[in-house]
Structures are given as structure tokens and as C-alpha cells.
Length: 566
View 1 (cartoon, one colour):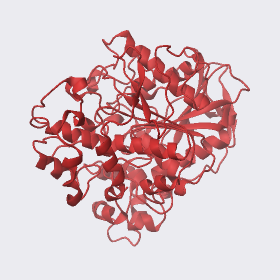
View 2: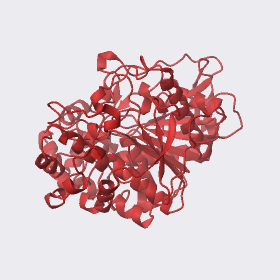
View 3: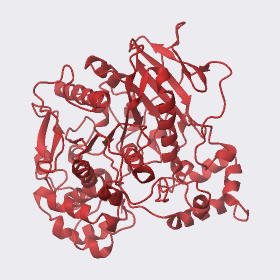
View 4: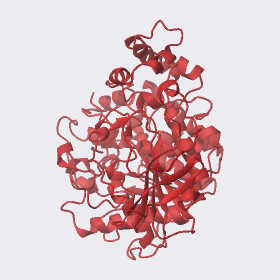
């Protein structure tokens, strides 16, 4: 069995270039002291880079919940350079320095808005919770912030780092017993509290924060919406989820499930006979521990239901309305399943076998897997990519023979991303809270024709990264806009400005300069569920569609959420 990685199409990035500081460097006086940033004359923006929001999670604080800062700056804190990424394991880390001391955030604000208290968009990067970083060039905030200014919707952008892989999600009886669970998600939460307490010093409005992420970052947004059984700490007023949802893309496992993996680590580290083997791991030299963790199991560590931060399965909380009731934007890409499904699907039996395999993101029992052929028939309406995108294509090896692979891809795209997107939009509408939902349907440059529109591909459009920062041939990617018609850049402008408008006003419509041909983005309703479709090959660029496709299959997944243990 071969599974595509969670961020297989994301690709690595280059080192960021930061403009030099001028004599008139911007400053911000936060609770811990004064921070000095750098002004970019190129973008007319102020950057505050690598600002700590927690104590360094090293030494005794390794593998513990994040701790608030407990000291003041004796002099100005120079925040003029991006800091290393958190330690992770995957392509997104290539080309960047990494460090265990990484709990920092970056603030980017448009210049010239003194005293106006701007809304704030907080970016949470993706990467499967085992790779990625806030300073990845593909997530350059300058372009979307500039679009906000031009659209009459100025806002301040913040990107946050959080611990990854075992560093942030180590799980075992020992970890749970000490109460140090879901540390990476708690990092995010502490960053949001820091922003709430300090963003005013940068000219931001703490009452107008929108959290925003993609893939595992979008799932993180979902976890924040459900955190502490849906408790509203008043630290954000809106949320944006790109290919990720409050009900996660995988099935929850328990600390007992992770125990063998933890025991293997403890034994390899020489901590097996220690009275406190977790404390022994904390005392290991970084290089030794990093080498032990840098294995094929680096992506295995994931959040658990701990009865605290993650109180219950997300599907139960949504059904009961136990979530923070703030407006959302939530969407997915047309062909998510080619990024998350198995290859080598040659028959209905293969389809059933894969669906019940422990190696997929969200396995289901053999009993329920046998029902899938009835709700996911091998018919064109259930093929991914759809016939409208790639025609009546028959996939060659290694994908699978005939159309069975495309049938399987429809299911795996739905079970990981798309069904839970529809379920979230329905839950928000049922509770009378605004939801704007989308389907991204544009294949960028560098994506093979037969893959359609896979995971991650909307990111360059949302950030209006038409320069292709962070995409390069050396790492197997190219500028997503290379060789594409003008409509691709027009779509990027439209999407980026829509995101900025939501961050600023909680409404993605009505901003200055919005393309007159594009349909208004409809608010989701149960009576008439509609998405907006982002399509650079359609004259409208954005058009409304009924959110009813693959209705029977998606509804089956939603109704069986508990069977998926989520």
C-alpha cells in the first residue's frame, strides 16, 4: 500500500529576505517591554519578527504544556529577523534552520494606520502537525495585507509557530498522567492569549481577531473552536478553515495506542530503567533526541481526546452545538482524495480493504467498509478527479486499473476533508451562525493533469503569491502561476481580497474593487446550501453552486462519524 503524504504537494521553500532596519524603526510596548521591528519601504509595512510568546520549551520545559513569559526585557527586544522553525520532519523544513526554542510569532502591519486599531488575522500553518513553519515563504503575509489596504479592508497579519511531531504531541500514559497533552495545540492557544493581551501595542484590535489556517492548520482552527468543550475565551471573533475542519481528518487514537511507540523511544534513549522516563527524555541532549525522533514514525504523533483541551469527539460537540459560535469561512479543493487516498486500487474488494486498513487517515471497521460500495458506486458522479475536469480518464499503474482508483479517491477525499467541511457548514447554519463555504477548482502550474485540483493548491491564491515565493524546481515545485493566463492572477486577487474582507468585516463580499463578474459569496443555509466555486477557467472566476454533489456518500460519512472515532 502506498499513501501520499499529508502535505505531499506542498513543497519546501527558500530563505526569507527581510529589509534592513532604518533609523526610524517601529516599536511596540508590550507587557514584557519594548519591541523594535523593521520597516519595509517596499511594502510600506512594519515587521516584528520572531517575537516570543512563551518561555522556551527546553530543559525542564521540554514535553510540558507551554508556560507564559515570566520576565521583562532589560533593553529593547530586536525583532528584525525570522527565527528558526520548530523542529519538524518533512519537506517543508528543507532550506530553513530549525530549533527546539521556537515559540515565537511574527506581526506584519500596514504602515500609516496609527491610532485606528485594525482587525487581526492570525495564520496557523499546516504540514500534518509534523512539519511546516510560520516563516515559510509561501505564507508571506505582505501581499494579502496589501490587498486588504487596496480593498478598503486593512488588517494586521500575525503568523504563529507551534511545536510539531513528538515535540508537540508526544503521548503515553506517562505524558497523560502529567497532564501535558496536546502541547502543540496549547502552544497555539497561549499565542492567541498573548495576542489578545498585546496586539493593541501594535495597533491591532484584540476584539477583532480571526484565526485562519490550512490543512493541519485549519484542523488546528477547528480544535480551537471546540477547545475545552466549546468554551469561548473571547480571544477570536471569526475563523477560516482551508481543507481542515472541527471534526479532524483522521480518527482519534488513545494514549494506549501510542504507548508502544513511546516505549520504543524510551528504550532507544536509554531511559527504560528510569523512575521517571519522561524526565529522562527531557534531560537528553537535543542532538541525540532529535536523531531518535527523525524516523519514519515522526508523523505518527497526533492529538488525543484528553478530556481537557480536546474534551470529546468533534462530531458529538458539533451535534450538541458545543463550539465557539463565531462566523466562519470553510472550504476544500475539488480533488482532495488524490492527496489522501491509497494507490493500487484495482477492484471493489481493494476499495473495501483500503477503507478498513489501519494505514489510512480515517479507517472504518470491516463491517461498515462493506457498505461503502453501495454509497460510493463506481459511477462518473463519484469519480475524482471528475469527468468535467480530466474527461473519461483511465488511470495507469501505480494508481490502479480502470476507474476504481477514481472511485476510491472520491471517498478518501470526502472522508478526510470534504464531508467534514459540509458537516461544519451545516452545523453553523443550524445554529444560526454565519458560514461562507467554498470549493477551490483551479489547477495551478506544476500539478499533473491527472491529479486535477489536489490538496494545498489554493494557498498561493489566498496569499496572492503570484511571484511564486517558496516554490522552486530544486525542490520539485514551480511558481503556480507560471505560464498561466491572466485570469489566474485575477482569481488570486479576488480570493485574497475576499479573505482580507472577512478578516476585517466578517463578510467576504462588498470590498472595494471586487470583480463585478463574480457571484456574491452566498451565506450557507440548510434550505439552500450553496458554496462559491473558485475557478480561474470560468469567466466569473467565482460562481455559486448547490452543495449537494455526492449527497448520499457524504451524508453516510457524516452519519457514521462515531464509527470513525472522531
